[in-house]
Length: 323
Ligand code: F6P
Image 1: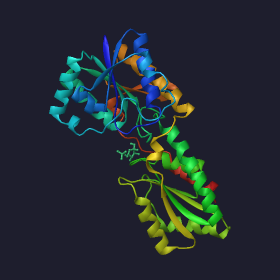
Image 2: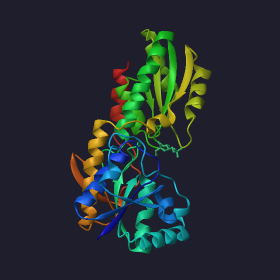
Image 3: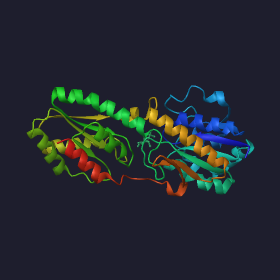
Image 4: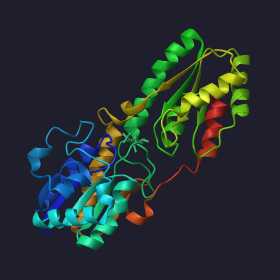
């Protein structure tokens, strides 16, 4: 293998740049040429390529977003899209791909390798932490820290005014961000898609807090498929139990931005090196992940959507500690 391409795809995540840096520098160190593919799979189909050297990844380890830009491509899911991508990659002499992204990013990769003969290696980059094959995805730790910073600030207002806040966080259809930020921010309750929300129980918990004269109440709500669900939930609670002023805050895309934490920079560097060396050593269509602090490779087919599985124990703990 002489030349590889690298792209970021799906939602941006803090630490993607650190992963690009590690991958590019490892590849160059190992004597490969590297092509940066702009705008994810859209750029692959359009031939939007730039040559990359060590200098192209200088001064990016600390930056959020992705210098390669990203997209959620519908066209790539079609046969014509894949054939365009194959043609552009072949013309550029790309023999292997490094893909940084989430579930959707790895989904089309196997099909593309069958159509094109070009194999890929994956690096988990998403704030959602919802992939099998790694304990942590790149960007998750930074997003958690962004959330607890925001919730700490909301707590100041909540306790000064004696208010109840429903704070909605991201996570698409998994509750990793909600559950762990809720524990770290000392939330009064945490509502996640993995557990059916019982309004009566929620009200009982709020009432227990009211009885012991709590000065503030924060409920962390994981977004559902559609953001904004916290408004509906707050409305349903207010209809039955309206004991303090109730407000809703949606943290939104703030969670995707910002400088990556130390943890995410190290994770991204380790996975960038491991993925690139894996590709060079002949690994095909697998994602590099970290499990129990060891590098582990998992076939793309098995990385699909990981939901929380220890939620009951953690929710029990969070609720007990916030009483
Ligand atoms: O997958 C990352 C994520 O931020 C999810 O948590 C969220 O549901 C989704 O992306 C939002 O995507 P977009 O930025 O395309 O609206």
